[in-house]
Image 1 (tube, rainbow over the protein chains, first blue to last red):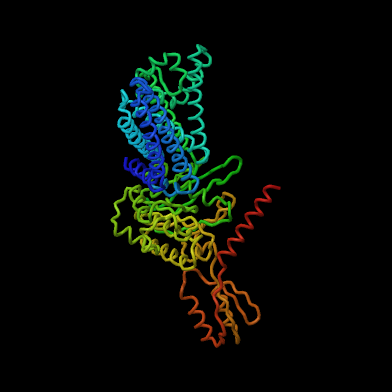
Image 2 (image 1 turned 90 degrees about the horizontal axis):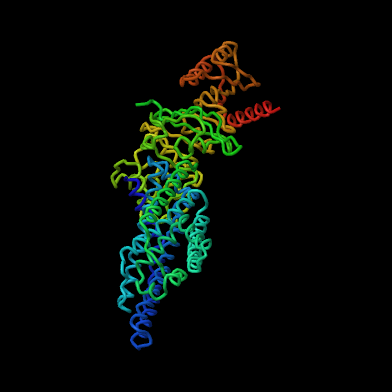
Length: 283
Length: 309
């Protein structure tokens, strides 16, 4: 346990000392400032009677999903690109040699790295996500229906992607692991949008693209669950089920317990494969 | 408590089609300094990494300080300076030492950790980030990391590759100090003079096999004495022949000395003078480790070629 906590602490310190934290903070502040300005414009339009209060609420809800997507992207990319250097980079450069020659189990070392990344990614998403919700509340008076669920699911999405990045970084170079993880993340999101369009058109084959991709990599599924918790229920009434499915920043249904269990199992399995690969690896 | 700090038997490792280590057996006694020698690619670093669990052997067994090396706990009292020494550039030397002490599970007070940094000449740089450190300074830190958790076995893989002559002398003193405290050292170095000065035993690896091993005396043979003598009488000649095998070249005589008799040389010189011989010069002769190593490697290469044909 000492090893796990020591390595987790070291990973967090690395994120802070390598200015990853600073870079993310600057990016987030920029995003928050931009969205504050955008949301205040929505509020101004609403005040000037260009929009009804229902329309303003709807716009705020959709915009919140859009901005949260930006935030989740920053968190996912940040942790995926941190996972590469912190694991593959250390084994490549030789930093891991001295550490792993200590009386530590490699699985404990990997768990420590993973926990550090989880704390970093989840911590970021909770703080930045909450700040974003407060900005929206202050500017447009909109507050999402299930904010805690949304934040947990967004953190889950980050954990899923960083677990994949950890698996990749046990096998390939640091740069390749980050690029592949982010590439798969983007591909799954696009497949989700394509699947949504397929569903709205009643084309089952196209709709299946989204379903399959959400099972293979649960990032998009969790993101859709988070959107559902963030959006105003009136949005779906406004677009209707078909329109809602086709629109990339709306989600028609909350996640099922079965899907959440699958996402947890997926993460555990991928972590297990990463550990098995790392334990066998010659350094 | 096991008498051996390292006991490795029948180690084998293959990378793809390349056999890196072939049936290597190796022992390091407690308090002993053993040199691991051999040309580039002989498998020295692979053997070291297998001892430390960094590389999994295809076959063979390793005991570290009496415990099976497959259990991480066997490395609790082991210090290691890798050939590829890199430490977290975002940390300071003191933080690196604290990290390794915590991972080793040994309680080492702050003062002792600081003393360890002082020993390798980094006392003044303890709070600077490693990012700006030269290679030599990083290697000095690596040495401190290997020493900080009160090891009973220290494995040093090319410990002076980035050091200046002063640093090399420091490493030599540190190794001798470890031996005097009963700490075993396994030293892989290309600097044969260094090995000759500090090692009790030497293991020579060649193409993944042990080409020779033994104490320096066993490997280098008994030492000889070269004397420039005039007025050599038959009794004096008999005295020389009694000492050991004698080779004469004009006024120069080379005589083999008996092992483990430090008084042999003064006794011989006193007897020769007593027998009326004029002694002009007395020089000790010893085969250098370098000559011996080259001999072993050439013989091993010739054997390999013979086996291939």
